[in-house]
Length: 396
Image 1: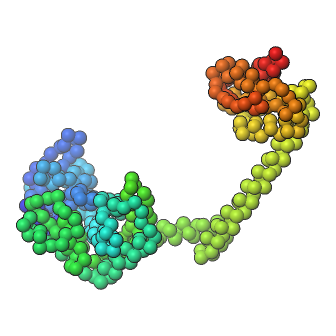
Image 2: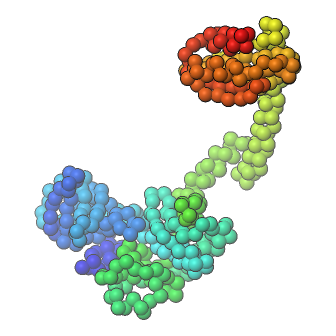
Image 3: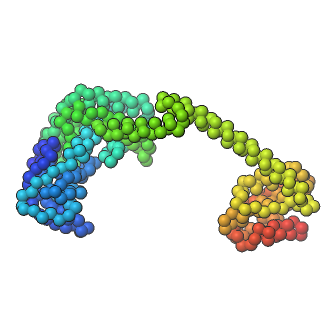
């Protein structure tokens, strides 16, 4: 029976002895052993499996398959029928803290706001619950975290009880249970009653502390990421390292990092604006220079690795400066050719003639109006050949 398993009888038992019932290899070629009883918790209910050793051989995974607990091994187990197992206690205690913390935080959201948890995941760094709501405010997060830590600080007992389906009506369960036999309840008196098959400490105080780290939207749900126990210290240590590094880079005290970042962003915005203004001025002088070398009313030029946005600005500056001008500009970017054709207000030539003539030759796409067109396509010719086609179109 489930309740006879060692990890349910005593979640704090670190070593145990048992008989080997079966040695096997699964369909994926993984070695495993089945024991007469076990302290190794198999993956289930959102809680990862235990790890450890059996007779010094690493246990790398634990799963329940067809009612038996399989201990997947790093190498073949050569041993007598009775063996000694040892779980990784640090991993087990961490999982106990996180899982119990999840119960408390979930119950806090239900009690305060009626927010139900629809899924739970115990990851390597953070734990997460998905709340069945569209949004959660910062105030609601803070209130749930505060209540959860109050329950932890009160060091309430965490009880487990095996009950029958008929006995469930005696308890105010947080959610309906999916199982109907061998029902195990995890109870924090006067706060949370919930069916659960995971391992937990015997009191809330052993969780230590709970801290909500972040939230994210997940398909009309809100995922709340948090940490408990020693993981809170790990998160604090990591954030302190990041803050300390930022403090050094900014030459600012740690409590002044945000102010320093605001000043840096303001300076960056000013520099971006100045750079944009400088680029505009350079384009203006470039347009003037191209006009000085025009052939009649036509200004033609070719470029390499020039954005089409720059070609557009340059063409507009040219025709604004000289109303009779026609600007024909081409840029070669990797395996593509891009062009812009623009006319001044005194010119009567339609630039649509250019795009209509050029685009089929480039297998390209483009658009515009009588005064301004742009487009691009495959590099089926050189930039000079393309400029010649554009100019000949206008001449004809």
